[in-house]
Length: 232
Image 1 (cartoon, rainbow, N blue to C red):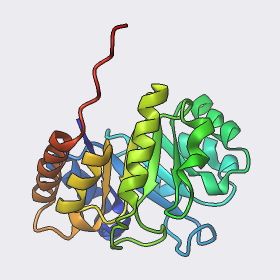
Image 2: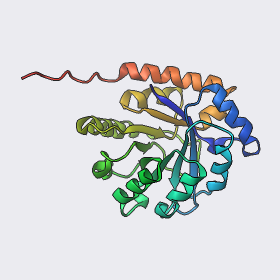
Image 3: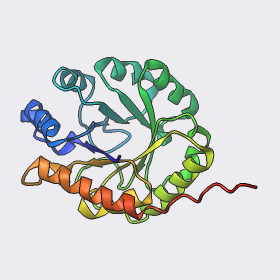
């Protein structure tokens, strides 16, 4: 099943609790939290206090995407705040393997993200250790950007490699996800869709999430079927 993880980046922060409850009723699977420090990316959003407040009002998994420098020093803080999934950027981690294991030791699921210009080969040595790979399909920092078409090939390459090494990692895609691109990225191998503007600008959240689910189902039908194992 493809999971839908609405990003609150484009939500109305003055009504955040109400909007979280609306997402629950609309059928969201996760809540995606775009944490930006104004250094790693050119924007500043929120941190542990907001996540801690959200943890008190929802039982949905909180998916913290740390677009920050030196994420190692903050792993425990974000886990204590209530993050169930903690994703760091490979570009921000000089000792990525150690960072991934620190996340898992904290009790959270570990994710690693790469930016559009980062080679997918940078993930090779941690693919067997992570719970999730986040492919950025826009340059991080702002919501409402246009999907980068070249992301589809990157998703396919990561999906193929995950299958080859029999990793249990899922693929999340973030950036420009809508009714069309959701179908395309799922067909390419995506398992989790992050959508912000598409969900919060729709007439209703329920309508937007239902649309994403229909498109995702179409994408699953378009995925190449794995070749059967040959018996020698």
